[in-house]
Length: 399
Image (tube, rainbow, N blue to C red; front, top):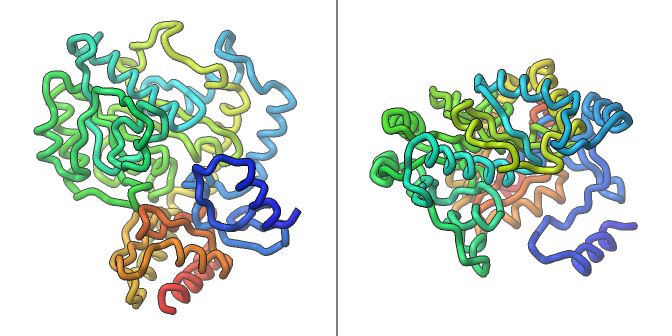
């Protein structure tokens, strides 16, 4: 079928909760994708950083097929031979004690919320049903009813109430507001070290470390949502490394599955993860052998192909070139590594039209928060491909 026919089918039979660019992707390899008509495009979105390893990485596909022939699912009623090695690898990578795997990022965030609350009641001594978690304005942690309860984006909340209590929202980057919001019922601070969906927003340099130090002093747990920023995307294995501290727990997902299978995880101290007793939390597919085998290989590839260092070196050079763009439309360029936001002036008329034009020229980006073009190619991208991307971005922003 042709692209226009496939788009029509999606619009006719699908829910209307997405507004994708008018392109159909039928094949992908490395940093490139093709539509049914055979036109190639450079993927500079990476499925919101789930494709750090690129499309259809050969080693990941080999792992996928080998494990799929052996065993795909056991549930957690039994042990499997991939779970233990994965748990060991991810906890050692994070320098943590324990991990609890799930499937999607939202599930891992929900796991973190439940763990923080129970930790507050059983370890900190907070009165039952009084626990509070601090979050930030313009956060994006997922789409479940509880998670949208503490979103500040009206489009994520409208029509979905009543909402879950127990959250306090502060301005992102405001350390004094964070300190003022904390009280004897505060059990945790859940935060993205860089806000991706908000438009690649980077906090003041002292915000995250200052908040972490305050948490340490006041028996509050700092949980970093690195679903989008973790595993090399910003030029460090974890984005928090840029700010000079290690949180009490990480929430990871997206790239952990190598772009071929969903897996997420909450990784933290035994004190935090130890609050769960058998039967209190779980998932039929969480920690399944297929996902764990792929995640193990994905972590191995990050190291063997030096993707974290590549993200920093190539991303820094690419940002320098973007900084030098002479465009009447651009207000700011911000980012770290290969997570970059080109912020347009309001007079530009929104980022969507620029992304559509880039698509026509063979580069796939996506607008976020109306005025930001997000640029986040796979970490396997090479200099020649980045040169191609820059050439097309420059053409569109200077036209």
